[in-house]
Length: 308
Ligand SMILES: CC(=O)N[C@H](C=O)[C@@H](O)[C@H](O)[C@H](O)CO
Ligand SMILES: CC(=O)C(=O)O
Image 1 (cartoon, protein in one colour):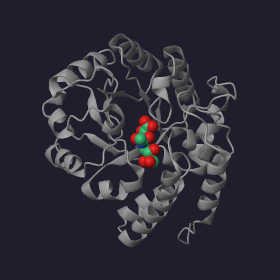
Image 2 (cartoon, helix red, strand yellow):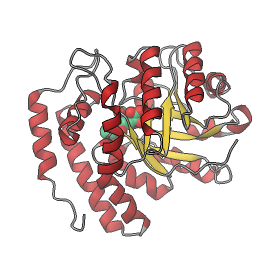
Image 3 (cartoon, rainbow, N blue to C red):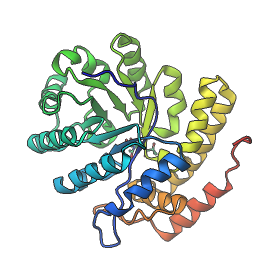
Image 4 (cartoon, rainbow, N blue to C red):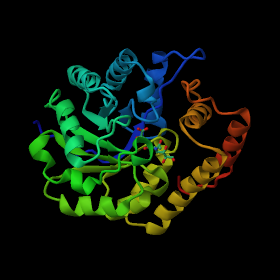
C-alpha cells in the first residue's frame, strides 16, 4: 500500500443535507466543503456515518453522496472517509468497491446491529469480507456501542487484526471506555494505527491518553474552537485546552438536556453556517423552533478565550 500522511486532527462527521421534501440535497456540498475548510479549518470528512444518517439512506443515495464529497473535496480536503457499513454484507461490499473506485481516502465500517456479531471472530469475519473488496483503501472500524449494541472491546479486536485485514488503519472510537482506548494505544505502538475519538465532549481526555484525532458531529460548527483546543494541548497549555473543552462542553451539556441528536445537529449547523441542512429523515423528527432559539442563544452567550 502506498504510504500516506497519518490522519491527525479533526474530521467532521458530515451531515446529509436534505431538501424540505426530504430528498438528499447534493447542490450544497460544494458550499459545505468550502465552509469547513475556510471557516472551521477542518480538512477531513467522514461521510455517511451516524450524523450523515448513512443507515437511513438508500444505497444509491449513499453512492451519490460519496461521489459528491470526493469530487467537491478534490484539492480542498485532505481525507474523505466513506462509511460503508450496512446490515447486508453484499450491500456493504458494493459500497466498499464503489468507495475504492471513486478514490475515497478511506473506508469505515460500523458493526451490523440487527443480527449482531456476538464475539470477535464473528465481527472480524464480517469486516474482512468488506475490507477485501477494497484492499488498497485504508480501513477503519467504527466502534459506537451505544448505537449498535455491539460491545466487543477494541483491545481484543485489534489483536492480530493486520493478518486478517491487511488494509486495517485504525478505529473511530465512539465509546466512553477510555481504559479500552488506552490499552489499545499502549499495545499497538508498532502498528501505527490511528485512533480517532468520537465523543466530542471528552476529546481532551482522549488526547491525553494518546488519541491521534477525532471524528465528530460538532466539528462541523465548533471545529475552529476545537482546533484551538488541539493547539493548546500540543503546546502544551493545558489550562487553555481545558477552557476550550469546558466551553464546548457547556454548549453540549445544555443541548443534551434539551434532547440532542442528529436532527438537532442539522438545525445547529444550519443556523451557524447558514447552509440549509434541511430536515432529518424519519424516524428522526426535525428540531423544534424552541430548541433552535435556546441553542442559538446559548452558543451566542459563550465567551471564548481571547486571541481567537
Ligand atoms: C452518538 C453520536 O452521534 N456521536 C457522535 C460521533 O460519534 C458525536 O460526534 C456526538 O454527536 C457528539 O459527541 C455530541 O454528543
Ligand atoms: C460522529 C460520527 O462519527 C458519525 O456521525 O458517524
